[in-house]
Length: 187
Image (cartoon, rainbow, N blue to C red; front, side, top):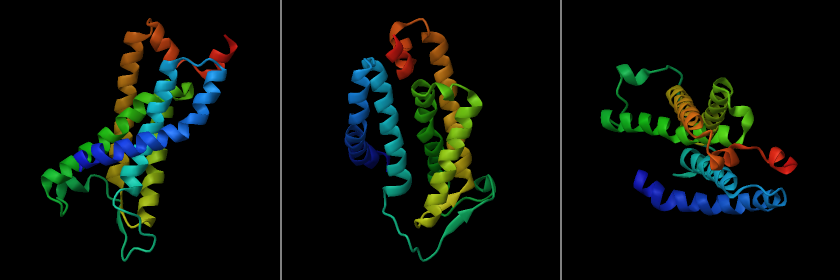
């Protein structure tokens, strides 16, 4: 699954993101946005596209599924192993955490309003709830554990961002990556 994602999903998402990001890139040139800032914005665009691809598009969409799967019992996997087996279940849980770590790192870099742990956590929670609701209506399972694990991943990503910010705040390239476009336009 992960190899397929790297071979097919990542290049598709990178290409789609390049097309989507092009107007923002051209607008950013007008404001003399630094290249490292463009890179951070593009990386966030790729990560969002990859999340959408993995959670909603890979495997197809069925708008009229024969049945719907919904788990609203948190941590049910602790007492019951899903049909997929224990090893696959653990891989699924870890993947759900890791999928949102880059989001937790990149959102505060690109959007200054998410430089608060709680705002970023609510953003990760909102995105994953939206994904799970969409999955329920498109023939996939909706699981509260996915919501929890994705949110934890966003929180871990924010912790990584905070560590990088503390270590790199004196570096000019880091300041250029984290400065907003409005500030760059005024300079």
